[in-house]
Length: 409
Ligand SMILES: *Cc1c(COP(=O)(O)O)cnc(C)c1O
Image (cartoon, rainbow, N blue to C red; front, side, top):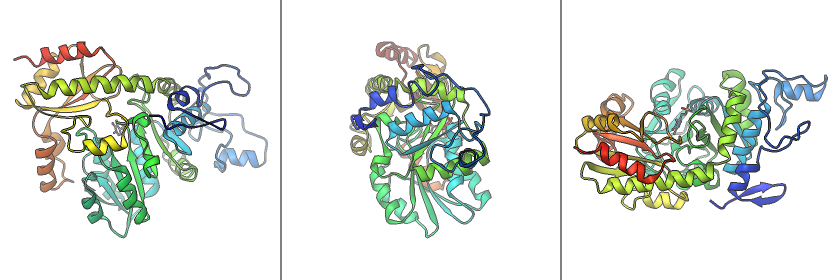
């Protein structure tokens, strides 16, 4: 990714911003690595406009008052992530789901309509499909990679189109630019969960999205040791969300986790190169393996959305999904045999992880999907014996050997 952002008036490349932004000496401390500021409260300014700013969050960078509002270590991370994504401002949250719920509840009210992706991160999918109705929010879930479905589902009260691309776990790709066009034409917002891609591979704001969400727990932290989330967008949008959602709903990040995540984000470019290379090698290997029915990786030319992925991503990420011919029992056997891979959920960690999806749990029982939707998903993207792989940072040959042994009869 060569598109850069400004630092002191000069355009800098991604790697430089990853190291420099939100880092370095600050007033009162010459430390190049900023100390973590584990304080719940901060000494308040004298009575006057600054005090009101600290308490009411009126300016873009109010003085810190209380760490649910803002905190220096969290703000340093917010500065870094806004720069990397090419956005004006960022709001870091305790988890990725706190970012998703902040965007949804901060923008929608009773009587509004959400147009959401039918198959995405399961926490978000269940929030949309099972919970928002309880608050009087109407939800339609469609395949956002299909523009006609999206257009047909728009209503006069639609306020948000929500898409995740690449989508967890099936790696469907939605065309961000095309969706942004539909959103703009209808005066509504496009929200993109870009966790799988990271800003190193894909920058939805530059393609016309209004808000970008990441689970920082995944690649951006990259070390598997802290939870976090972020929303990135315009200054006005983020300021509004911080007041409404962080202050009132309370999903603020721990300063220590923010510090860990900022430290992890420094090496995001290097790590993504390795995650992508390992994932591509695994995808190619599995494609020709006799036990494997099919492989989903947007970097393979036979992936149904390879062209869109090539247009909007600079590489294809560290995640792949494949289906074993012998179904769930073969997936379980493999998960129990691997030694270099770990059988664990989550993704974007140094360790390579595999996780199998019992289709009946994920698809058959989803009451918010129609039978027709389930049929298409099962036939085209899921089915029995689906395994999700997060390619880690280990040696490629060791990973291939481990899968090869685990898949032997
Ligand atoms: C993991 C994940 C989330 C949720 O993030 P948490 O940090 O676990 O709350 C949201 N979206 C995607 C795509 C994810 O992979």
